[in-house]
Length: 87
Image (tube, rainbow, N blue to C red; front, side, top):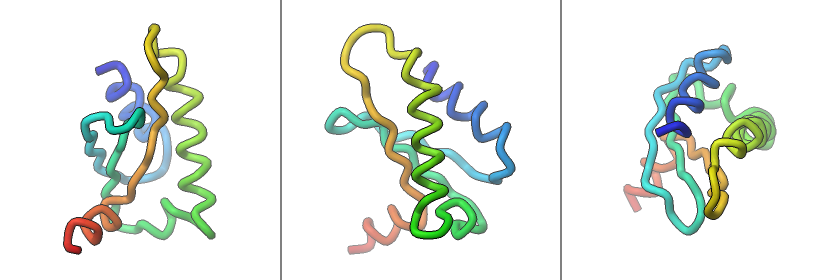
């Protein structure tokens, strides 16, 4: 729940207009789907913006993990997860 709250706060502070969908942790990761009207801005050139967002979120969320294994954040733009589901 703390991870969800902090992630939502992070995106409120950015200029990205996104809807956030949290999935159950899988294979030691926390998948987060993002839905936006303009995914190009979110992804950036060669995925660099998306990579940097993941990096920042990991740094913000790491202190919230009290004991146990650290679950890295994996951000999946929603249009990619929908394409995957279609296959």
